[in-house]
Length: 142
Image (tube, rainbow, N blue to C red; front, side, top):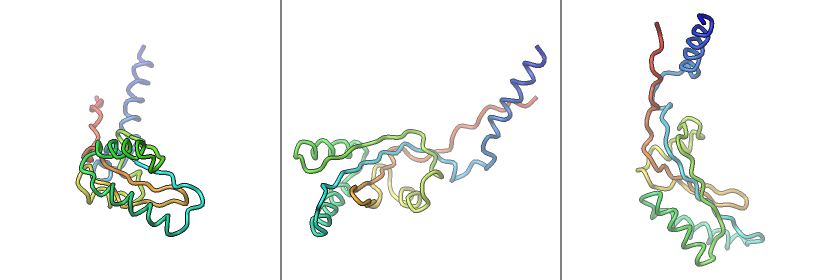
């Protein structure tokens, strides 16, 4: 019985010390939404630029994450772009690339990041909740 209690206490201490970095701005977490659209194959450079301009103009109007969902529905109805929306709750801000961290933290909640361009995809990331510090684990010391 005493061994089981000792093991339980040890596990509780190990879990609270899993990340030894102090709580601070880099330990904040938020809900992120990523909206991406697939570019059709064989677009000319001029057509790619036009598509990026349309997507950028539309995503700059975002004020909430719901705006991204409405834009995705509009794109689907108009058959303008094919894409997807991915929502991730409780994302550690420090897990993002530094450039994206700075971009999102410098924008109001609900606003799209700068355009991220891949070979065949355009993306933006939106912080849907304000970055907050995680709740501290209860003190289990004796």
